[in-house]
Length: 411
Image 1: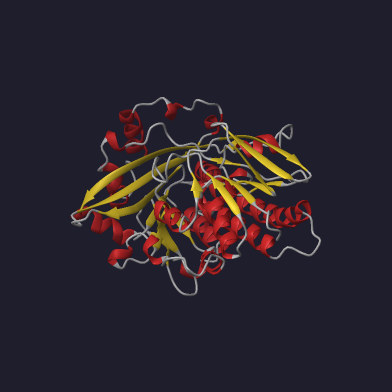
Image 2: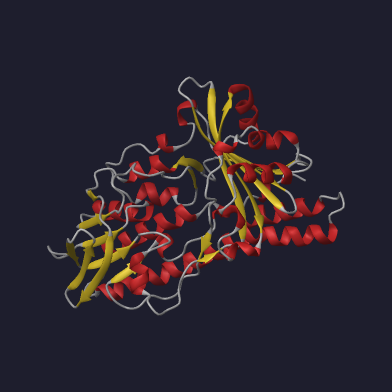
């Protein structure tokens, strides 16, 4: 690399930070710009599932990175990651998966993962990207505060509403689509006598499946005295009307949302809904979340590229979005570190994008299929559900087999 070679990274989320760490490992200059005022100026999300990215994440970041163990939920209490699927009506366990050396799996605090990735990085905060210009010498990024930065290439790591993508792909018609799923999401604190039973269902999280609704219940953290623990839950259902904004959940009151959630889960196995029924209306997240995805398409040739949610946002129903974003960053860093003699920046980016587009498309489609199982389950229920839940066992077995977990599915 020449002395004036520099990578401009727009966005300090997990993908952009992973790229910056890969560049730091190889001594490649970078500047990273984040619109947040500080790392903790807004909610950082709740929890992430990290699995197939772990080997690359630990192997392709600098040797001076701190221990990664502490990012795991419940690490201080010796809790290893575990999740389970249940039949919502009978409470029957259909599948359980735990962390193992053969299949590493961490349920992680997103803010702690972000802090870990920030180690020794010089991040420029409160930098609102507005546009870029590109010429034969490089790329210049411009910001709302009147400043600019010049680099050899620019990477849009600025999320699902990427302004870099908006300029790069203008006229292409590429934009995220709303996934046709309604949801209600809530936070709640449980006392020890209740949280102990919930952790037995799944130390990290569990899912309860019914023909028309899915209930996800996830652990967040313990209180300092361990007398209470924080959980969150999400009830989701298929409804094509979500694509016609505003959907009813966007204007409903917390009381109305809780009434809907309690009504739709009234026939669920009681222990599976204990967290939901312990939630006051004040715990409901408003407005309700919207889920997006987008199949990526080839990018224009040049010195500007994209990664993560900026190019292939995906539904959360396989728990892979963060894995894909960080993989993009690490992969691009590796391509830059191993740049071929005489290779131009546009040529290098095309090699990265060829790999990223294939990988990202697969992730979007598999996550979309997992989300749209709501549709299939609803159709199946309309045709066949009459007290026979064999359809649910078959559905979960197929999903588990697709993810390589077939050996732990229970008949």
